[in-house]
Length: 232
Picture 1 (spheres, helix red, strand yellow):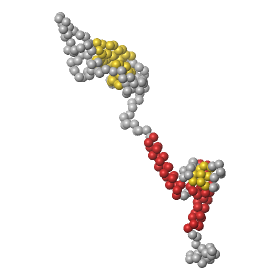
Picture 2 (picture 1 turned 45 degrees about the vertical axis):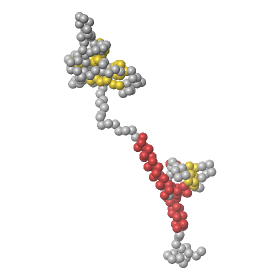
Picture 3 (picture 1 turned 135 degrees about the vertical axis):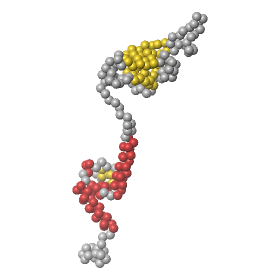
Picture 4 (picture 1 turned 120 degrees about the vertical axis):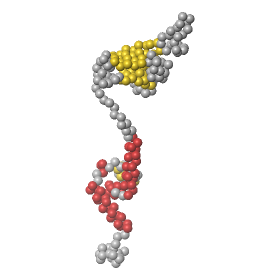
């Protein structure tokens, strides 16, 4: 077919190229450019099968040679799939990110060991009159409790020891046992110590100001922290 007399063509040029010829030329130029700039050894999606053909594992397409595969990588389908894969990887990585810690900074200091302590079981005394009548305010069996004395000769100046009760599910050192709870005592620079006690309700020392059985005292002169609590 003679293309010399087509509109816009030059003499001897063969006429204006159609859409198919333009696409072939474009793919050939992209293939040559890709061969010069892309290293197939670093492409994670290329796969050479047992027939010698090349497969794109991202788009699931088959190619006869490296030039065809490189031309495919520059096409719209491959680039779209790359963008989708990048978006999916970003979403997956965001789900794996650990939650950000709270703004409360954990205090770090050099610990010098455990303090000395002494634990004594106490029981409420019961008084009776001459007729055998109970004079104690409470009724029923006598209450039980514990008195703890902690010696802190090297406590940090200005630091007051603290204590609190912890449930068995809050601690991470032992398997949780609902029959027990833990009494925690902390004072810098000593290590925090814990006592395992029965999981019974504790009377609040501030609940009744006249209660002589629940108290706490810190002596800065002797560096001894003493407290006592009673079970309900």
